[in-house]
Length: 400
Ligand SMILES: CC(C)(COP(=O)(O)OP(=O)(O)OC[C@H]1O[C@@H](n2cnc3c(N)ncnc32)[C@H](O)[C@@H]1OP(=O)(O)O)[C@@H](O)C(=O)NCCC(=O)NCCS
Image (cartoon, rainbow, N blue to C red):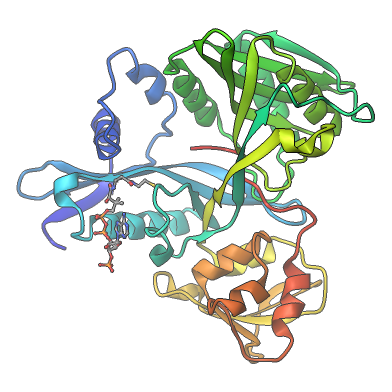
């Protein structure tokens, strides 16, 4: 397309880009009161805009913040966290998003970011740009009247209600030690500012609680409560992290004890979240949805493959990547690491499918069954299943 240009936005263009993005989600523009807290959540020089050449109007935007993702083996892979993607409704389906995505991926590659990640509003959009579903999550509700904690469950430590601002400083300091599961993201200061800004827009009061174990802060939660009529209150869990069983159980003992609440809703929890196993009646917990969570794009495939660990017999993958062709070729993965190889391919797959197996969210053999992976050597998919499997399912747990 030649009737518009893509470039990095200047500071004084950021509010307009945020309002454009909100309009694409059918949300009102920011008020003067809201803008300072939203501004604090934006990293400088990470917002792209598309302007029409003739009118100079802003018609599309996408931004990111610099983060890192935990990969199997515990390493941190530099990642651009993509968000605020939108194209003005009267300019869609003209390739504007495509240009934004390509420009952003080139920029990430130039800055040495190894991966990109996003949460997709619709699941049909991002595969074409090389993103694949790298973590999944589930929503559940808890019937509080049935939810009695088993006697043999961990006791947990002390849970304190705190002022949100001071709590967030303590959470930010404690969070890196909690982000050990594959798929979890580093949270820069701007992410915490974004959470503060999001919570400020909640209609009702929000409550912040911190769990302290023997080593200090090891869990936290923030929630709001809807109480449409007496005797019918729902506690909505907005954010919860716990570094281990004591913190997990301690926070849940508190949440299930809040007076007047008959139901707790929790969203985007790990697939293996063990809450029902803590309860005398596991059916007190009902899963209400299971869906894609973080979509990952491997920007530098050789680096991304080399930065995780593998356990099992080696396998050779052949990767295709029409958007970033420098990633294409064969890679040998094994306990010694991952390197480019001239050996023949045993499994063939595209870069978006590679992202689906990189953190262990899907087994390669499942993807053979659905045609996403082509097996060219018998038994290779089963070998790859073992090589890439992880002890726990990956989970992101950070919304942006
Ligand atoms: C989603 C959105 C950004 C797409 O922008 P766009 O400029 O229309 O996208 P493009 O014209 O570059 O489309 C590229 C391809 O993706 C497809 N596509 C785009 N949006 C799609 C959608 N929502 N569902 C399915 N396919 C979609 C296009 O049909 C096109 O396919 P083709 O290459 O086969 O022709 C835009 O529609 C939008 O702003 N939507 C509302 C806000 C939103 O959902 N933002 C995303 C937040 S994660």
